[in-house]
Amino acid sequence: MTNPEARPATPAGGEEHYLIFALAGLRCALPREAVRELLPLPRMSRPPSMPATLAGFVNLGGEALPVLALRHLLGLTRTAPVEPLYRHIIVVEDTLPGTRVGLLVDRVLDLRPIAAELRQPVPPEDSLNGCVVAQLALPEGPAHVLDPARILMAQEQARLEELTRKAAARLDEWTA
Image 1 (spheres, rainbow, N blue to C red):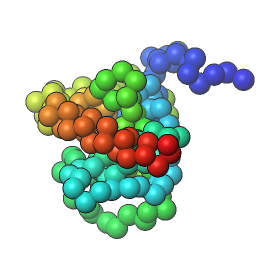
Image 2 (cartoon, rainbow, N blue to C red):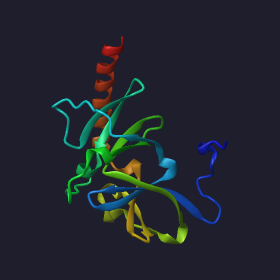
Image 3 (cartoon, helix red, strand yellow):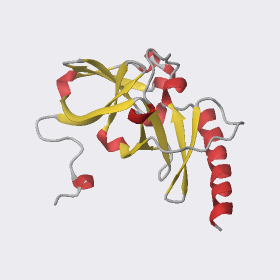
Image 4 (cartoon, rainbow, N blue to C red):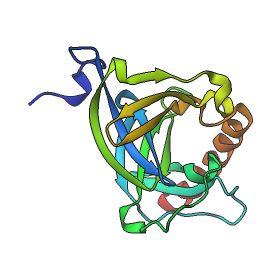
């Protein structure tokens, strides 16, 4: 059986794989190589002093994984109620090597190859911190490609790292 990590990032024919997901009535996407894991919505701990953009922390194999409320972080309003049963956490590599963060989304829809000519770049000034890097022209409508390294601004990243250290210390108290 082939190791999925051993697959080339760009398949033959100039296609790239994207994970497509629903978020506040929009389709968004992440490059396949940015995605480490998909989780059904588990129980999260969320101390009351957390910012609204932080959905909480998940104990992922003894690691405190911060989960960002992507809908709130991107300023998207709810268009329809979301069934918690269908919500997912997409675990991505964060801006620092070896660190991970979860992105809470309404629902993961598909993982598919997209031809290079269907990917149109988006200028960095068209989104906050340049987090939307491209738009995919899909048959069912456009999907906005996000860059996980640009979802948080530097100040938010520093605060998240501090909160994650505190959550990890709290988790260690219970496992010691």
